[in-house]
Image (cartoon, rainbow, N blue to C red; front, side, top):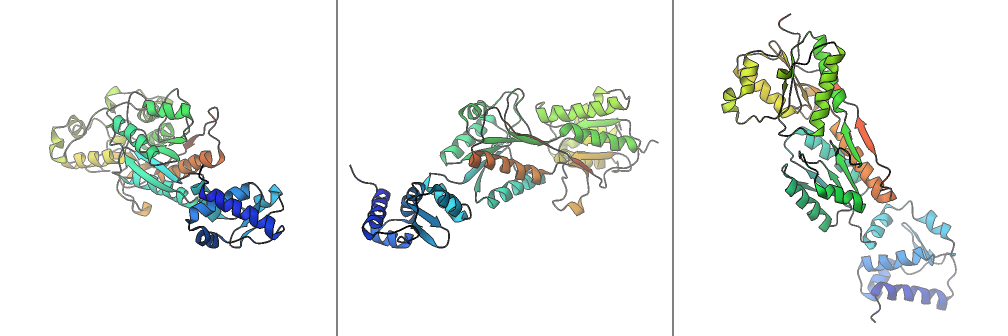
Length: 381
């Protein structure tokens, strides 16, 4: 049977130590010398040297070289931790790619951009890189993205799940197979997984409280999600609880959900436009920034001024990536931190082997209300 090249290098080092009478602390040939001697790549040499180090034959000291070990495991433990390059080399040897997959429905707003920036920052700090695939909000494309990323060698996945009534069974499969992943923004009811999201109930509660202080009593909540996802449900529950706490009755007509706003030129035909024009509500809470902008545009077409005639609070700021230039009053979800902490959690699972099926990290980030230029006192007071 043919002897692997890395094993030939290991045998050479062992023989060299024995025949030359090398003692603990004596230097062994450098990786460059071994590459030239055996006419092999660096990865083959690294593979051989890491194997010898694991057997306590040699000790590798970053920036200095490799030396004959005394045979005590402690030497190896002291020499390796301070060497980031060693971690990368060992990862390559062990078949690790240091690739993390990120699956999202789309990248159409600043929420997604800031989320990705947070993920990238955490990965960069640990020497990882990302591969981003978009599902387009389609569960089959999401499944295909999982498959593609796994085949590409992704060591784990960060998943912003699509809006889907039924579970993506691939997520369930990853859970039971122990494949590392973290869900972002929403979770699967009844299924224990690692996830991170902003506290949606608190977000809508903050919005209702502020509008109530401004004198608004006819407060509408709007979602253009085609399905009642967990995220949407929790935000609506927060809205209802906040109104109940104030002794207010819940007006079903003010809960405007499961609709789509098409082209701005056709907005005057949309039922929401007629709702706004008739001033059914004096304030609107929108569950995403894009919808906040669409309501702003409809109000303008209807001859109404924001915030003089109506107020708008959106989840996430749709108008500026620079916070100081924010126009919309909005619920800030700290999406950069969300992405950063999601990636940190995933890397912790991968590097520390903490993917225990009975221990899951459930993180809710506390949102904040950022006052902008789209809210004012109730005009009917």
